[in-house]
Amino acid sequence: MDIRNLYQKYRDVIPYLFFGICTTLVNIIVYWVMAYPLNCSTMFSTVVAWIMSVLFAYVTNRKWVFHSNANGLKDIFKEIVSFFSCRLATGVVDFGLMWIFVDFLHYNDVAIKVIANVLVIILNYVASKLLIFRNKENFCDKK
Image 1 (cartoon, rainbow, N blue to C red):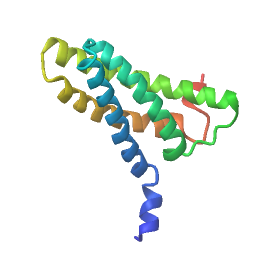
Image 2: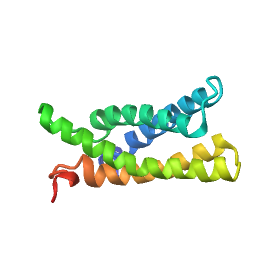
Image 3: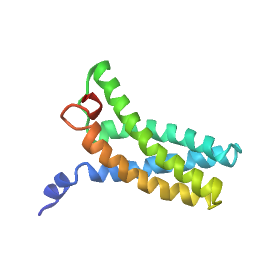
Image 4: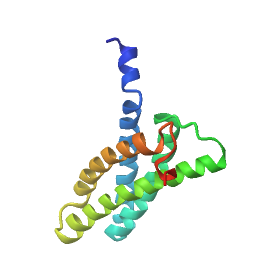
């Protein structure tokens, strides 16, 4: 198998991993800034970090990972709603892990944030690939 075939086979995975790492860095850096220099609570810092990282992820996933062909305000709005809905579901995983392991069990918050983000990246890839940026109608459009 030559390089071109290998790239075609993993065309979405390679940029997703790169931007997934970048999104994770956005999430962790925003969390850290909110939690430490700004002295905000764990949950508030987690929510702000989640919002910023999801915005970053939407732009990068739409343009460079899944090469969305949604055009027009209506189609883009549906795509954004699908993306944020799926991300909200995986955000609950992030919030839950932070709440249980940091607030209750008092584990290191940054270590738990990294672990939570690895799990969330995997779940988000599956949701994006199968539900949001696929060529057929979006998951949220089905009744």
